[in-house]
Length: 252
Image (cartoon, rainbow, N blue to C red; front, side):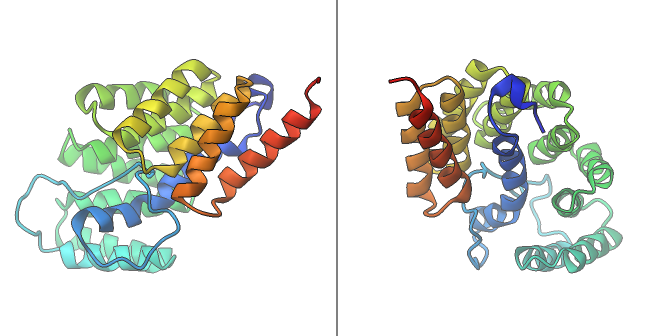
């Protein structure tokens, strides 16, 4: 995902940020809209945030909303095929359903079908040009394709219009980290944490930035905070393990 020679860190931390955000979309949508929760391991923002909602233009519930909710239920259960079918059917019922296009893009992104996800997010943005979640989805696709410069530019543009969007700062932090621009990455993660302190992914990302900068005390605090928010979080546990390894090898 990003050269270890640039960050002197494994590829996985940045992969985690983008991948975990994609996995957390459904859970966060449920939390924000007050829908029933089954409890995904990612209950953050990222989750980001982190996260995403159905703040579409129409105030009334669209005809395809029932199918969208069915798709969300399938997605939460990991049944991506059924989820995709439900979102696609919602689009047939109501082609202007921005939420259906957006969630279809999320499912496709979750499955690694980046070109299809890009088309779905593009369609959502075509319907509602200032729909920030879909704009961030476009950036996530670019990031997954390792087009980090383009992704960072897009995230920056979204944040100019939505400066309080915690997920946008989280994603920008991951993109800057992938570019090797650690100072900017750390600042972006801290901005995400300021806006949404409960996002474990932001703390993990910040921890790896501190680790790369040899700020070991700060790195440990960031990883520990992530574990407080999400006990047993593999990425935070891995961060602590790497931190302890680096400390053990450091000159006394």
